Image (tube, rainbow, N blue to C red):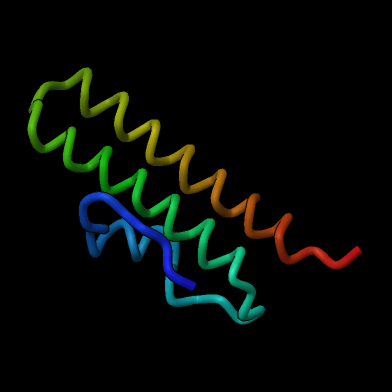
Length: 81
């Protein structure tokens, strides 16, 4: 599966979503993780470019919620009914 992404995904974002971990082999899991890693990478780039406490606080909170959302999305995508 290929997903078009504008910009690059940072190594730390790849680690945060554990992009290489997909025991189910489901394409939907990879897609969810790539999208989450892309969003996290964007937040990291904004944080690096702005350099102020409020931006850091907001982006850290956003990245935490993206990571959590990805975990629940993967759980939903892999739950057998």
